[in-house]
Image 1 (cartoon, one colour):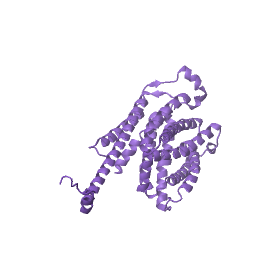
Image 2 (cartoon, one colour):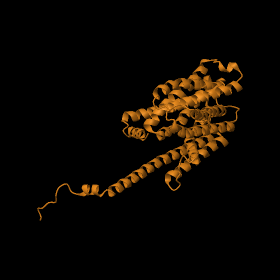
Image 3 (cartoon, helix red, strand yellow):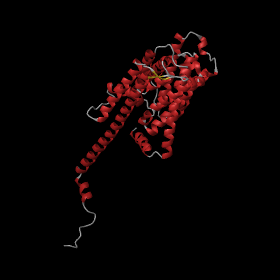
Image 4 (cartoon, rainbow, N blue to C red):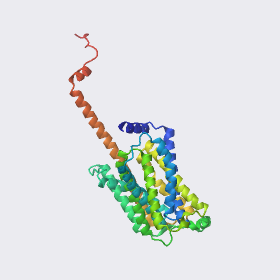
Length: 384
């Protein structure tokens, strides 16, 4: 495993200029894909698609896309499945698929795509906080990286709290010229007459579920290192859980029928782009650029969503949301900077320990030292 890690880090260091360009291009495309998912999901809800039927179809499509790659690409590295692994996959699905996607749709239904995306920027900080509480992540308050991570986490929590508790006045609304352009999208507008605070609480639940999923994946992947297979099993159990919930609470059979091409498009987009393609692109970007590189692009998604939602949904911007989003983005970068500095410090510490170890080995073997320090040529006798 150590060799694999070394080869990955070496491949990042020798990453060519064209590949760096491809990485940046891929991350931008990924953010546009996710941004489109926020807007498309909101459109699906406003079309009347059931909040239980939508994730069922989405996960069916995602599972059909993931299964062939997981089966053929991970034949050699996939451990034998056991009951213990199945229980862990079921719990991962409960947190990372069912709770994660369920809370997201409930929150989005009561707020807007822009603020759903803005709150998601708090996921890295919440993940760090959870990992620290579970002693998976170490916090050194006597170093600048530890202080930066703590302050960043506080900023993210403060930002999410501002978005939830303070809506504030409208800073930007629909102008008369924009009204004409968005008339065709009037059925896809902002969440009117719904509970903004409740929606933000749901979105915080979504972020907590997402962060918990990321933290709990780490010990599972150590024992079962086939990432695509873990994701496929998780998606499968998530699909089963949603089917059971839908069978109990969604009694209307008409909800399972597509009534327009728009509904088909939203479900296909969610399954193919937001789950299948996005997952593959993200794995490649993490492998070649590292998790910090991928996370830094997250706020770009919020900006893209704001622009898309403004033109397509006629979304309004509120002061509380802008302040909260700014705090979350600042907190995100503080946490990421702290993680980056922590890695640099760990690398220097490791190099220093290795140097001391090598030096002690040389001193413990005098014959090696004498053969190195003695000159290769006899001393000159010209001045004798």
